Image (cartoon, rainbow, N blue to C red; front, side, top):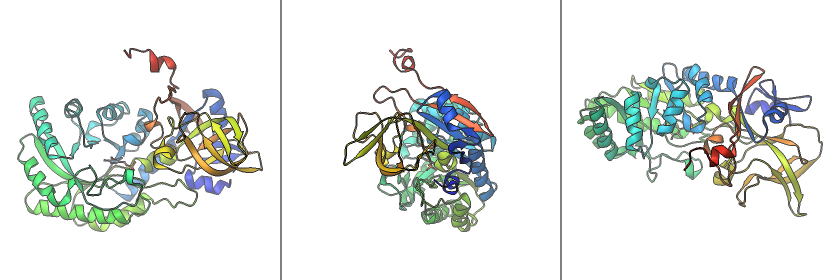
Length: 421
Ligand SMILES: *Cc1c(COP(=O)(O)O)cnc(C)c1O
């Protein structure tokens, strides 16, 4: 594979003498020392992505969406570049705090926040709750009252735009469970403003994920800024607008990845109408192409009509191909063979849906060879499970030629015995 294509995925990814390196670290050395399956993330890439958002949106707050990759050391790298955190659960709040994020830079969305989760977030004095229903505002007000605190809220609105992405990750359509319909939102703002422990300070939206064409953002932000304008005219003290995350990344060789600058160009005309603090919540576009998944070929099985390459990473390690039919580019870690085959690259899980790639043209691989699954830094480990009682993979962070393990490979003891009953 040409080096120029690899660099389009991640500028720190290259072959040296036929062997794949990320930020100057040999991936076959890492696999030998730490084993497979193994997630590897490039810290410099994460830093550059956060900086790119701040350059495109000066004065904004970039809240990294923890659900894309919740490893506290990954969060810490983003935080060191000034990022806050966008969380959707109590567990993610604890990850963000463990990663060193200041609570004053944490925003909390989610349609189903529990009482315990809300109490934890109120207690930690996070920046803002992005509330998604009328009932939630009463419960939140009650909790804030009992703890004796005031909390800031934005209302998540549903601008009813089609982000032209996979239906499971389109979140801004009227039929979705998220937010409140933008036409009826004013009513909820009024109700929230009447509650004595809530300060209603902003409007939030998040229209979906893996959005490669920025035009739906333009439509959504235009509608949301109209609403802010209306609310301000009616006397609400709206100070911020949170335009969510969702910017898509390159998964296929032919994909063109939009930059934070492309997003800024599309939405700036609308944002500049009002003097509001802008909040962004990028997840995938910060960490997606920072990471890859290394796996080892266990067996090769030729059924005549079909060639299977069976590797030691399965849908429990990376579920995106199985549930979204997602494409992940796959390259050999040692690029020595000149021959290509057309193969299904599959995992060891007992499901036909357990595959990493289908009918893929790839170098002929043999037992013991290593593969790198690209674009696996987001929604990879964070969606991993113990299905088939498989310990979850180790995670490694590389930077400037050195590496450190940021999560050890799980043991059977961890899954089975440690205070689980
Ligand atoms: C998932 C999510 C994000 C991040 O989406 P990406 O596509 O990873 O950028 C941001 N905000 C909210 C509310 C989300 O649910």
